[in-house]
Image (cartoon, rainbow, N blue to C red; front, side, top):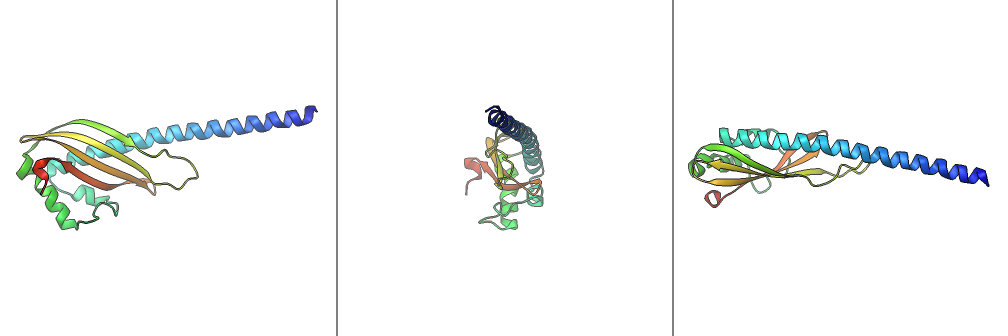
Length: 152
């Protein structure tokens, strides 16, 4: 009678250690990925809006980035920034983060979505940037400037 009970408690202990270790790994992984993605989102947005060039985005593009665009059309869209919005004054806010938890052994794409507020000399806008984590690096899947002045 004692032997089955002892084996049950050993099994339960091992199961709890595995579950706890997995949870700690997921927490650590999410913190690292979240920190890296938000830093990249801010740096890319700052560089694109300051240089008025899509080159930083295109350098690490995910195939979704140019869906419905070609590289020249996307560059032209980014090139409209100084004409319609003026010069970048400051990035004012960031919100968002990772939308899928990094679970070990599941082969899911990890996506991070950010809304970044930016003040220009002619208007305040929100920049939406989506990053996808693939093969150990973040790729840009979407970049949109939400402003009536950029619509057309």
